[in-house]
Image 1 (cartoon, rainbow, N blue to C red):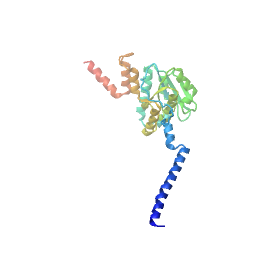
Image 2 (cartoon, rainbow, N blue to C red; image 1 turned 45 degrees about the horizontal axis):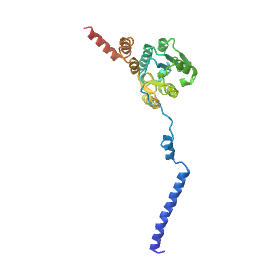
Image 3 (cartoon, rainbow, N blue to C red; image 1 turned 90 degrees about the vertical axis):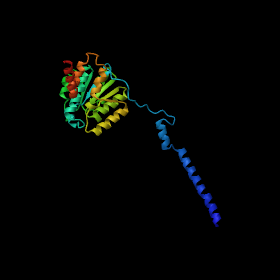
Image 4 (cartoon, one colour; image 1 turned 90 degrees about the horizontal axis):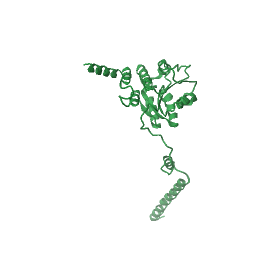
Length: 262
């Protein structure tokens, strides 16, 4: 074969093979939905409607709509809390409980397998809420899987849940996700919830926030419920609550009282 013939042959063969390969790929593309097509369909870009995702609420806490849930603050489980010091954490838990009591929020207490190593509920909480519904779950890890607990929550008629517990990634996160699925507005009190370390806490908070929960702290909860220093019984009860649980705020109060006496 001459050089000219070889060139002519190659110039035809390569495009022909390429055309055949392209045709085969096109046929396979048309015969089966490609990954990109599936991704577009899932995102809604292919003409389908994606499942609705809950968005973070902009609503404010209301004393008329909120219920306080204290989940598994048990003496044994408290030893697992390593993202806060023991004194700081207990102070935060009791501060949140005192906030609920100050604003007369319906409060529900629950424990998990308290006869075992988890231990009994923190005695301070039982003393603070002697008449509150107390749900001792026999084994359910997720409090929302316990019918008595869910009935107690729904019996309040309230749609805003303020929740804290031990541990953050399980005993808090699981009922939070369940309550969100049922249309409740959920406020997670991060500093009254504890777990193994900050990394675990941050992952749990991220998961709950992405699902639609509002992440807050006990001081912000108290201020949001109060709204105006002049409301209710005036500024003194809330200021005393802050002074009891925040040493720096107590200093502020002492300084102010000293100045007003002059």
